[in-house]
Image 1: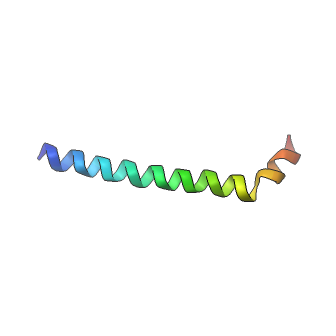
Image 2: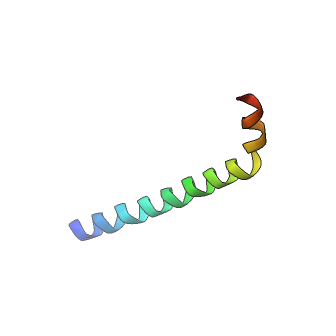
Image 3: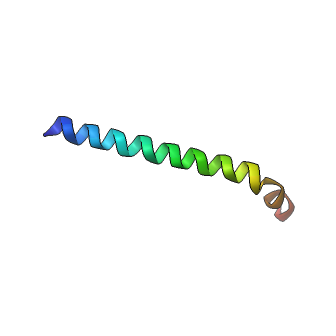
Amino acid sequence: SAAEYRALLTELFEKLTAQLSFAASWIDNHLDDYLQKLC
């Protein structure tokens, strides 16, 4: 149904957002100095 489809999309969006947020945070914490040296 449409409601189930929307719920699935919402769940997927939330999972992807959390993963991207984690990745960005990890890069900032672990690679920031390295990336600054490259610039």
